[in-house]
Image (cartoon, rainbow, N blue to C red; front, side, top):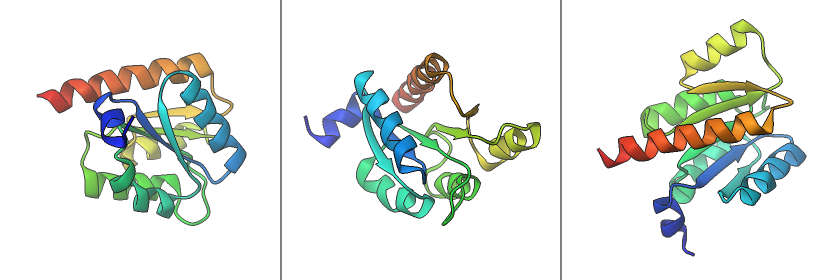
Amino acid sequence: MSQTNENIDGKTILVVDDNRDAATTLGMLLKLKGYTPHTRFGGREALDSIGAVQPNLVILDLAMPDLDGYETAVLIREKHGTSLPLIALSGYGQDEDKRKAIEAGFDAHLVKPVNLVALIDLVNSLLADYAKNKSL
């Protein structure tokens, strides 16, 4: 199936985490759930690949060395608007971290280690909203 057809199906997810094992593992889980995951290992790498990958949703770690998840989210919002769903997935789980994530443009904030059922439910919900908004 071509990249374009995958995107029409609304299942392309960009996973961004500087921990390669975490990104790869989450990508494998998403693939098992029927999604088309693409993994990147830093904020700049994610920003450079969004045009080619054309994700329907982005899952971002917050603590990354080159460009943190907050900064990456702000830049994604500036360039791609607010319709692309963004999930913060991080070890940072204090109220201040969640507030900063929402201010940066994230739609949701989950704390590692993540409950996988909750993550998949959230992904499904955000993708359904994304598809609905895109068709309007």
